[in-house]
Length: 201
Image 1 (tube, rainbow, N blue to C red):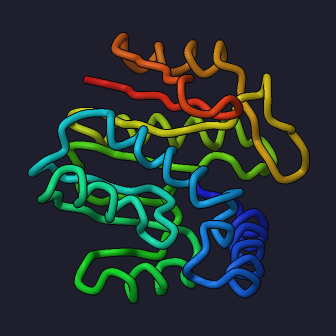
Image 2 (spheres, one colour):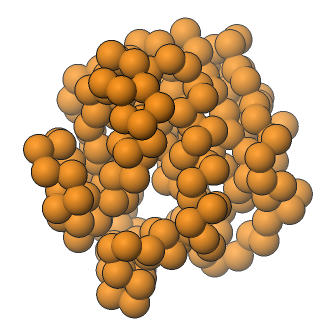
């Protein structure tokens, strides 16, 4: 389901303020605590499979940093990014001329299917009923992915849950993802307060 108009405005406004404060060269503009924190999450997503020559949709693409990791690791990847914040998309387009980025709410996405559908940090901002909203998005990611979907979440055992951050228990995520596919892999070996999930066909 799409965000409500109020939630969408809250998210866009938050990241616009962050973008104004930190600029387009800093991972902190995207809410990451450091370049390392952002980079290791993207590296783990890239380990979901061999994406060389494959199509990839990046949900909540921000500045399109995932594209750089995919290109470096795999060479040729047919990439497309979507983000709810038009300013982020504009920055991504400036950094990656010729690469398709679109400003839109993924909950309203009705485009093509991709081999892989990936999301880094897209489900970490707390809104009302966030579990249902984001679990619907995860289901949609899996339905759009012909090979796999992969995403990361904040671990409720180690990360603060407040008005900004949405956290999750491994058990609840495992149970939900197992209702979509039996081929579920959880990664907890890179950052204590974060985990990644790979869903395979």
